[in-house]
Length: 216
Image (cartoon, rainbow, N blue to C red; front, side):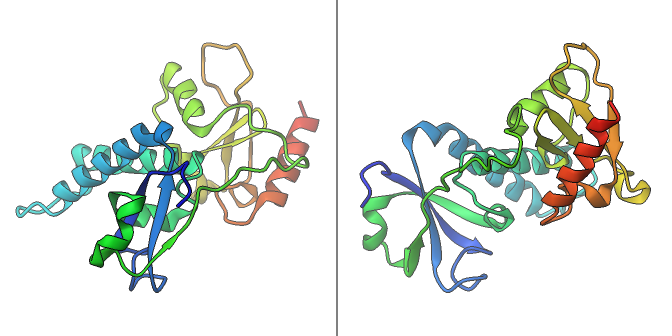
């Protein structure tokens, strides 16, 4: 066992558990420093599950349901930024907290496969993000815009924000995070089809941002 990791998340059901998209339960080890964000995710997941499975039913459009849903999404994004979650399928999995050294002793955990945290390697061809998505969310919140991290992407100094109308209007607003303004006003916009909200779209996004910067 890697001594740097004593605790882990193990998949019990969903996409990354046995019978999902793989043949084994995924194990995600994490360091002690990340215990807080793991705890927040597990509590958010449980809270949403309890609400979703209430015997009287659930109105997904209710403010309570939306708050619980976005709490889980935001907690999952924190794990993604820490390298513990690697993709959306981890957020579609039910997890249990466990000790790494007890995995072999508990039958229901087997078979399992250990997936260590991703090491984030900076691509020198892409601008280093001005801040994390969570920090960008806080930046907007300080200016009266309360967004889900699911609707924010950061590229260089730019925060790209997906709104309800973005797909219909093919438009994503771009905010300059380096500005000292106390207001959150979009500097410009790019096409939704050129944005990072489209999977595997990084080249188009970088070209669109470069063109926008040329017009500054």
